[in-house]
Length: 308
Image 1 (cartoon, rainbow, N blue to C red):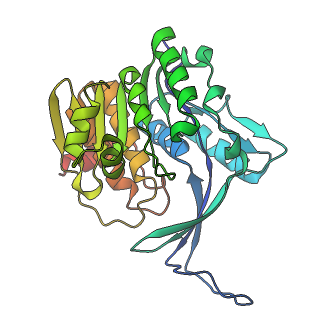
Image 2 (image 1 turned 60 degrees about the vertical axis):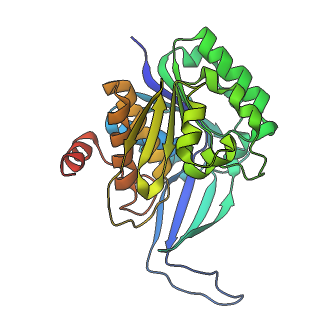
């Protein structure tokens, strides 16, 4: 028996979501908006919250400030039985905050990273990972931290029994480091979105990219947005068309997909079903403001999928 089903390390912050604001007021002016919603953000945190809502024993490791936002984050995690014992409270920095200007067409952000500046993959301890069935890793930044990621992921695979999922994320340097392929053989589940997959693989389509990635990783799962998702594993290609919903906010949809997929992967052991769980969680997360506010519990998710 393991202490946790899933161990998550990474970013957590507060998102202040300002809906239908298309620009910042000029100097000296004040504009009113319909609503400003406060919720938890950060890809790793949204993933952990999703798993907590689905009922998996989840531990989150990261850092927050010694402030009301840090308290709010820990209280919310505790509400969903997420273990917060690995969260560090910093007195020299505040909890990160991101102002999200959201409208029907796009989003833009003003961000203070705060305690997220302390994120370093080397903070993950093997003794902690050994307590979990699975570890989810984010925060890759190409050649800037490639060696640290490769070293740690190799050690996790060789020295623990935990399975590993890895969401690569967007490369804002434009490098799309080809060396990332060195990490793939140690991965149980590789996550990318369609654009990331095409860039990293140098292929023409997401399907070609997934087929290439799956020559190394056990499962390559590619998120296709409103078109659903695909996964390739052991020469087999799985596809799920996704769900049609009226999207209010797409923030965190990819992280919600990841949580649903890992639930299906760990609990059901079925890649095709995992895609459906992932698409269901990703779709429902878009029906509310914020990256996790509309994320379903297991009963709601099953009901939603049955109505397909």
